[in-house]
Length: 248
Image (cartoon, rainbow, N blue to C red; front, top):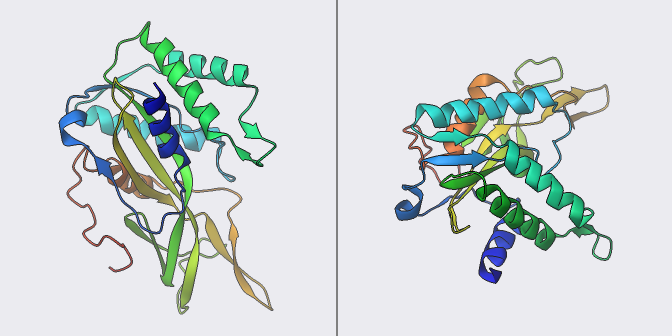
């Protein structure tokens, strides 16, 4: 049990600001998982600013459809959510005032308990955790690159930014997927770009990027991000070949 808790703790506490995108995949173990229970995207983390429940559910629905289309059985997750909420309530929150940070060990313990109680009444091969997290994105010219994708930059009017050269690094939103087997072992982890949450705001004195008040979650973009985040669990033929994703 200590090993399992430590494993999940390490995975969940890994910094979301790693320089480069990567995936972990154990073919021998993950190939046997055909039925999964999926956590809601905002079960563990709060929804990012600028998103509402409709957008989150839209993203979840596209993930479920993609899994169904590729032969996975997605079990109902109401029991998992209910058990998670009970354990989270018992923990009295996860913020540690002594460190000023979220207590990852508390989260890990609550997750293991919630999964265990869910398995008592529901049979499934694995549990898939979904999270929207902030990741580093690199601006180059009129495009932004991160976690397998490149996207055009837009101004506040929704127009593509042209005749401008940007350089630097900002945060963007990505979908993180983690799959655990029946022994609570992590057998798959990957990340795919979802949305660049900034728009260019111009005034007489300056130009700057500001966080969008309402994120778009465009169908084509989130579908691409989902395919990347689930590759190679579900092989995506268009998977980027450049490991740094900073080139066309």
